[in-house]
Image 1 (cartoon, rainbow, N blue to C red):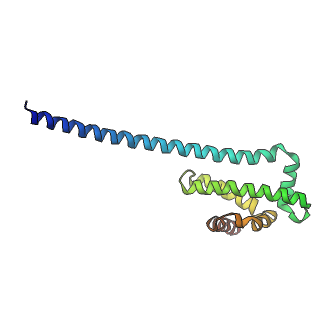
Image 2: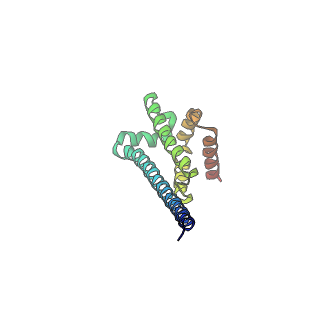
Image 3: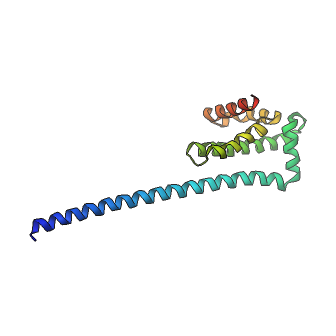
Length: 155
């Protein structure tokens, strides 16, 4: 075998190694992306659980929440501030879920549950009042999505 043949063989082997490395890196990137999506979905679930847990564990907050949804005007000023923050916190978690839906973390079936919650909570008389108070804290696109979900619930 001459040196040209050995060099050509080396170049072929080097090219094979480069291609194999590229396939390996692509597989690692895909696996890393899937892992990141799972972590993001888990955090979103944790946020939702924490919001519901506070309502379940605090009877006074639970009562305030239901009273605020039904009759916001009947709340005292201190209760209104607390209810406002509760609905604002809910909307922030919805904003996170909406962003993750756009990234492909949530599928359509999972997002449907959030839409139902938007209609039930934000679409209530008290929820609508709070929404108007806090809308400026959210992007126009997010506000448009909320309006569309609420409008679809009325149909």
